[in-house]
Image (cartoon, rainbow, N blue to C red; front, side):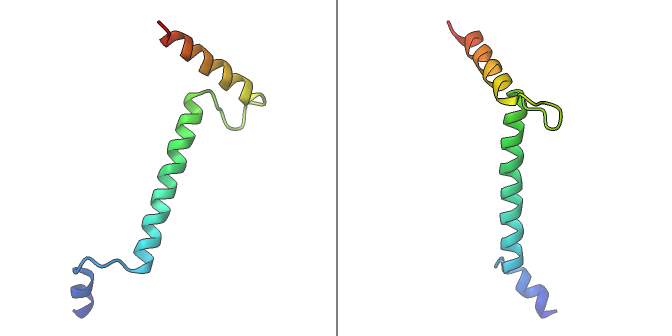
Length: 66
């Protein structure tokens, strides 16, 4: 019963801190991957990714140019 009172106080244990850090790192990695995929990155199937991404970025830039 004393353990439940400790967990209700809102203090974080080292395990909870590590879990939060892992979760934040995973969210950041997934956001970066989503951005890369939006710009033409296709893991596993594409051998010329940088060139395709540059072309796609240039096309997007041209589409928004006045």
